[in-house]
Each structure stands twice: as C-alpha cells, then as structure tokens.
Image (cartoon, rainbow over all chains, first blue to last red; front, side, top):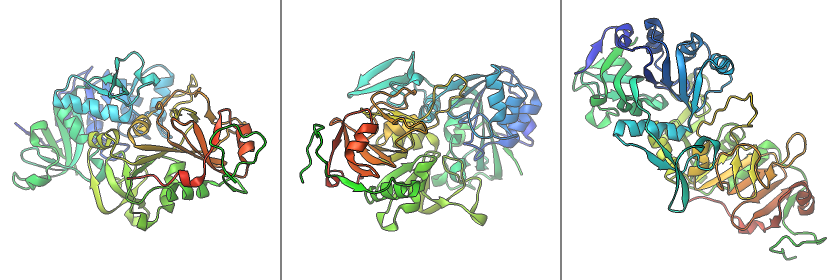
Length: 219
Length: 240
C-alpha cells in the first residue's frame, strides 16, 4: 500500500540509527536534496550510505557527512574538487570507505533488488579492488565474485509519480533511482508532481509502483 | 624502403609515418577522432579524451555514451541550454541529440561490460607493454582513492584507446614494462595515442604506427619496452 506523504519529515520518520540508506543521484542530478535535509533533521546517525559520490559542496549528502551522521560510505567516486567534507572526515579516520567500481556498484544494487546472491564480473579483476575476493576464469577471462548491496531505505528523486507509485524520471537524473528503489526494503521517493492513477502512460513507466513505499511531492 | 617486422633495426632508419613536431592536445584529439570508424558507439573519458568530441564529423555518425545513463550525448550545454538533470560523467551540463536515449545505471554499465561499446578513450598514468592500464590511483598513502567507472570502461569496451603525454614532467616514459601504479584493468589497452607517437598494444608486442617530432630510434631510446614499427595502413580505423 502506497503512502502519499504530506511532508518530507513524515516520509523519512522511520529511519533508525545504524540504517543502511541508499541515496539516488549522480553528482547533483537526481539527488533528493529535500529528503536528505529531512534525514538530517530527523537525527538518525551511524548510517551507512550508498551513493555514487560522497557529497558535493555544502549541501545534501555533504552536510550529512559533515555533521558526522555517516559511519560508512559505499561509493565509486568520493574525491571531487568540492568533496571537502568527506575528505576531512576520511583523513581524520572518522568515516569508513568501501570503494566500488561504478558498474559493480550499480550491478550489486541491481542484484539485491533482483534476489541474486552474487555474480562474477570481469571489472576489477587483477586490481587492488578485487583483493580478498573469490575469482574464477570464465570463458578465458578473469572474473571477480561480487555480492549484492541491500539497504533498509532508499531515498530517491523522480519527476512524476502516480497514485500507484509508478515513476517516471527526467533525463540523466534517472541514474541509480530505479535500481535503488528495487534494492531497498523501504523506498521513499520525492517527486515534482503526483498524478492520479491512470495519469501515466503504462508504456512509459520506468519504475513500477511495486518498488515504492512512500511518495512525497516537493515543490 | 621496406619496414622490418621486428625490433632488430640496428642503425637502419625505419620508414614509418613521421611528423616534424610533437602533437598538441587538440591535434592528438583530431587524430583520435579520425581513427574512429563511422557508426561507432563511443565513450570519451573525463579530461583530455573529452576533446575528441570537438573533432568528430557529422558524417561519421558517432553515438556518444555517457555512463550516467545516456546514448546520443551532444555538445556541452551553454546559456539557456543548461539543465541540471542533463549532465555527463564529468558532471558537466551537456545537450541531447535527436535519437538520444536514457537508461538507468545498471543498464548503462551492462551495455559497457557486455561489449556493446566499440571504443572508449581514457587518460592514463601508465600503460604497460601488455596493455595493462593504470589511470585511477597514484597509490600515494594520503591520496583519497576514487575509481568511478574507469575499471568498467577499461574492461568492457571492445577497444580501449589511451590518450596521454608520452613522458612525465620528469621525463620518464609512461609506457612501461610493468605498471607501478595500481592497475585499472589487465591487458585491456589496444592503442596509445601520445604527443610523440601512436602505439598499438596487443599479442604482437608494442607496435609504433607513427611518430611526431622524433625518429623511431629516438622514440625507442625513450621508451623502456621493445618497439616494432608498423606502417600506417596496418592500423586502420576501429569500430563496428
């Protein structure tokens, strides 16, 4: 049953200390800033956050990291010209980093949503990011065993939802949204518009509502 | 004059295509663009490889992929075109061309890993004689590691072109026997475009297609791996 929330505060109210939270977005595109701000206000701490990056500038995920609410980041590209809050925490030893090649990150998230127990991938074979992992030669190629990444909660951003929780996205802001929606036990989506049931063309739905628990309209 | 198909060249001058001066960044980008076969699906890495897009010709009908979920990427956006929801892998606002498509991250990397991309062009710290690539991490103890999609690109594309200066600021060759920086991918690089020469890497060793501002012999003196000259016609454009 889909919850249509009035406020972002209500939408994130159930997030507990120690949760694993997937946050959509690649850079700022698709990053659910309002939900992240509400997560900040709700006080949850000791979080493990899954995102491609580790925050940019002085907003969104970067502030969550600055305030010491993130115990561990699982991401592919933490270091950027404006990732100063992550950089400071990392150098001080105050945040753990699990660095994952971007395609492995995406596929591990997808695997969680698809009920896959793990997969062999050539990406990372022979590199330090495969150290300690099981490897096999399959079809003559070295491959590395990677496991799914599950989450308690996903916070994502879409363009529109209908009353069933079906989602459509906008341009490259789609990025991790669909796979995170499927991977998390509880998925919260901020959208620019909520349309009535029947208001989305079923052929154009990207994320079916079965993956969505709560939606909230953000102006 | 014939070209000897091995490295036993002695004092003989080798006849491969040679230009008088080293190539600048834009000339190098023009050369890479020219070598991409029409109809190819291509991913251009962040930094110097992005310059290649400036020299792709419309008649080449190249489709650019960006790993954050788009095929049919157009030029960088300016003015009113700038849209925060439409960025490339370097997080720069870009435009979409007619026929573009969007897809989620797992699909984007599946098309990469699945061998559907013809070429990716990447920068590098080092490339080994066997085509190993090091381009994501200096291994310095205080460096914050960030890999992004580099390992996926290096492993997934049918052909991996590297663009880099041949020498470090200290004058050391970045084409090496064995990479000393942490690897991005093993045996993945097929061509290395540098300011001083174009190299082809593969089972036949490191071949030199052309040189810029140096002779083959001068190049060999700079690079600590055995080089083999090949005529230009042996290394045609790459693509589908």
